[in-house]
Image 1 (cartoon, rainbow, N blue to C red):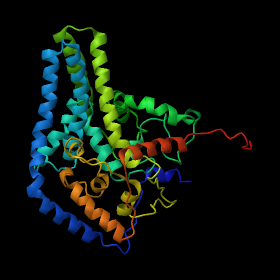
Image 2: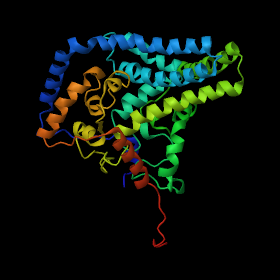
Image 3: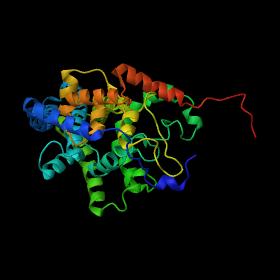
Image 4: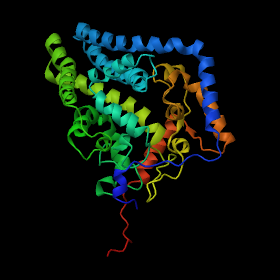
Length: 369
């Protein structure tokens, strides 16, 4: 068992032994320089294309939304483009890889506020918690979603987890509802949330932004279409639900496959709060790549399938990940380090198996004290 006090202290990673990670970094940077003339156009093209597509689909909704087919397809399109903008722009911008200008990168991160999420709190969750401590209980904010699901095998068992592998697939489409309309507020006002381990005080202006942008998000997606198109509140709410469902499903395909499955490890720190492996090896043990690769995945889904490359080299833009991954895979093999890759279906099935494995089953033979 982990001491209660250690849960408040950041886990420490030991120094790597007998492995030349410096050479790996050198090889990766050489690959980036070699590939730059071929792919760098994509970085700027995406920076302008995806926001324009989001605006264009919203304009189509208001212009031709009186047609029910256009109305509902527009909301689905906005949901998909919300995810595409997050993966291709917001996510890379928070790591500073789109523009040389830090100011421009910060500006693109704030685009997340316009799409309903709070960029201030997400940046902290993503860079200071998830990337620093992936798959570590009480520190990886990506798994701090709800007590309804038991992902960590060492977490508390509750009766509600008994059939989680059967229930959660039907709850997952509500993922974005929870993130945008519940969790952001919990992170601001509930001091027991993980984010408060690294944030001493949230600036007052961020509370204003939290409520202001949430209201703006609901107004332009619910109120304005209602007023412009003259449709019923039930109709416009139905479109909003479709947006959330589409965005939730695509988001979870990206979020669940790399970390939350039976092939990923969930290491614990020792009583001295030290992790069993170096930071580099830890990333390999808790992260999986997805074998399915295509032009669509690379261009629209931001090469999410090459997730190990992102965790090892978050300051490199995702357009370089396919080539970088070849270097990582070879390096892992040469140094007897773990490298895992499954198909998309296989990784999602492995997530379901993790839920089933961590489900609470009643043992009628267990002795009671």
